Length: 366
Image 1 (spheres, rainbow, N blue to C red):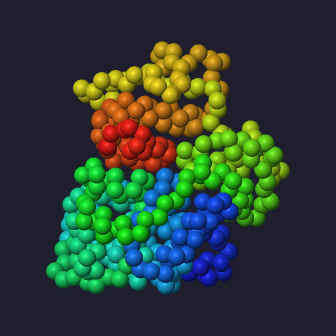
Image 2 (cartoon, rainbow, N blue to C red):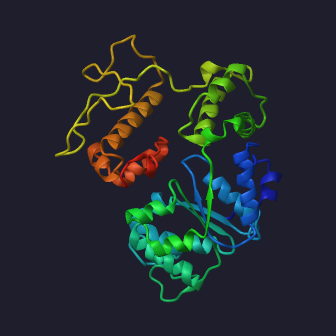
Image 3 (cartoon, one colour):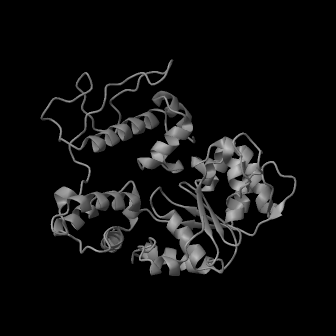
């Protein structure tokens, strides 16, 4: 699919792409760093929590550099099935595998001349890391089923939640690939460290979500947001505001329509055996407030009534956090407790904005 240039987007009236908003010292420092590194062609490793704006930082690097007229391609490495990774990255010839009915280009060819963002790059399996390293060293790729290499000119940007050094220490990320990708490291601050940007962020998000509608926040709303930790960062803020727009009365977002997590504890389903041979999860866990009344529902009147979808998301999130805490954030063991694959658990953690503690918090590596 062809990409629209910024001029074409503006001409047809599409809303502008999200930008790195905020006037806090942290954001000013981040934008200054981006301005310095945008002009060089060195790889950049972007570190930051889920939803903090890593892809926006990558897009800013691309837009301010010489490669801006060429494509910017972003891919979540954890979302590609392992069996299809080589074809996705390097392309494939017709008949290279069952279902390959046509020859097609890969991500490297699509980003030729521009930038390729490898989001969650530390989720790549070791076998694919070897092939990626060769492509970066040789600046050439070979399509799956092909016999010749083709030159590619791509600036590599990568993103991870904890930084690539963690994967190297745990033995899940190749050291030679780490040195190839981590030439320049850029850290994106979480929203809780720049709450002074909330008003600017809210205005920018609302202008994008409702470009033809004048929307404002009621006075208590900004104060309530300023007292919230935002585990999902800017992405969570955008989700809250998008929901609040649906309940806005006369273009005013009130506190009761914001949908901040309630202070009352939520009931959780009764513990169940997640998989054959797995011990049941304990309901009580340090730091988590829960109520339980068999067969898994709290007595009526003791909990707030929430939309069913919101309740189920909260219950799923609590159970995943409980499994991770019980297994000291070892994803493999936690996934077995929950009856999931590691890839499924990783997807749900990202979707539900579940963050792992830092290494210095005393948790063992995954």
